[in-house]
Amino acid sequence: MAVLGSPAQRPNAQHSSSRGHGPLKRRLVVGVLVLASLALITVYFREAQGGVLHGAQSAGETVLRPFETGAERVARPFRDAYGYGKGLVDAKSENTRLRAEVDQLRQQVIQNQTALQENIHLRAALGYLDSPRFPADYYPINARVIAQPPSEFEQQIVISAGSANGVPANASVVTSDGLVGQVTLRVARASLVVLLTDASFAVAAKDLGSGAFGILRHGQGTGSLVLDRVPKDKVVQVGDTVVTAGSQLGSRLPSSYPVGIPIGRVTSVGQSDTDLYKKIQVQPFVDLGALDAVTVLASRKPVPHLP
Amino acid sequence: MTLDAVKAGLLLFVAAVLQASIMPSISLLGAAPNLLLVTLLSIALLRGAVFGALCGFFAGLLLDTATLGTLGLTSLLLTVGAYWIGRYGETTGRDRFHAPYVSVAVVTVLYAVGALALHFMLGDAVSARVVLVDALVPGLIFNLILTAPVYALVRRALPPRDWSAERSGEVSLLG
Image (cartoon, rainbow over all chains, first blue to last red; front, side, top):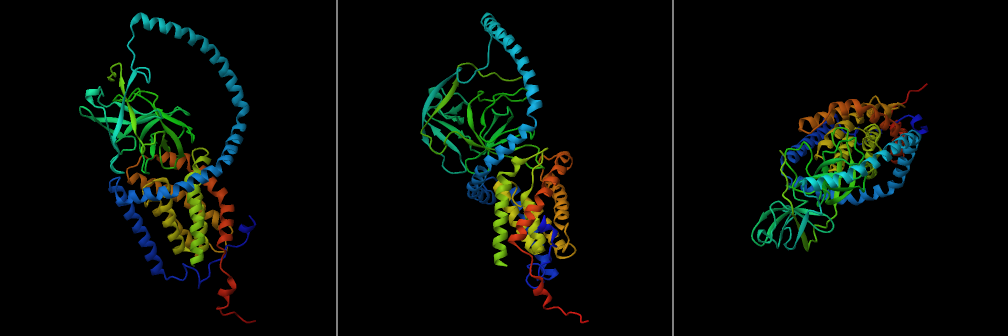
């Protein structure tokens, strides 16, 4: 504040970068910068995702990522302390509310246990048809990866199992770490699998920490994923696990992915004033650059189609 | 000039990295502080319009790259904002105690309106209510809180020019 109390002195007329320039030159510089910005917006907006500007931005983001990660790690204790302090403010009222909720939930647990037993008996009595559930209702078809992604722009692999081996159309492909992608083309003894990081890939996903649903798709950085369409009021934390969400009520098309396949971990959560949704970046669990073998999930039950 | 550019570049780089990585997590009532904007305006106020505009352009590129936003969008907003505040610093804003606060307050509002308009023109999903009603006031308060320490830091790194050097060339009245 003491610094602000002192007058903000005017830059030297002779040495100042601005005042040394005439009005024409000054306007010329700012005009060129504004035109350059408009040109960047236009080209970036119109070019394909593999365009020059997108590529340069991706490279720049890769360079900046370590700095961002470092800053995030340095700030984490302070952020935790901020969160802790913020939580303490509401702790008393929250404690009262949670105690009431615990009492209510305790009664619900008893009711639910009773309902669960009834449910098991009734399902058995009715011969109830359920949708396939991962992993119990799927059987694995293990396959070797016989062709790796040819370039950064074609995120596809070829595996050594095809329709003759029982690989279903649009089947999910996983490893023990999580989701890899989806079968898009089958021949007798081989299948083409589009990876998570392909530009055409999208899957309904759920953040386990907050319960928020969104659409997981290819991010602009190399190997990065973005969880889109998550409202700003959802509290998504860095480190949360993201899994497949399955078919959502109200969606027109059923998801071909079973519920609950791990996809990745949230690495950054951001939002700007102008966006309706959060900007969530997700790092896939699976190292897609080092795939040797994968598992194709084939359903034991037919996947239901939504009306 | 070169030393000033290096110092300003370092300040803006750190501010952009912090803006992309940490600042969004300090959100309150749907708004987060804009450290990069406050740093840039402080630089523009102390170093003038052209220097500010150049810094704004590159700071915008840096932020758009770090956040994978539409390249050039933030550059456009920051270039215009910094140029304007640079002119304010060169003319009427000099010697004013409240200059940093007024600059940050006005540009924060105009930045929000400008960003809304640009995103709308690009066909992005934007809500005027969220930007102008929900988030603007908390964001403005955040930025004003940041103004004092950030301006002090920038002023230390880029001190105002020596007045005596300018006076030496002036004619002084006798008597």
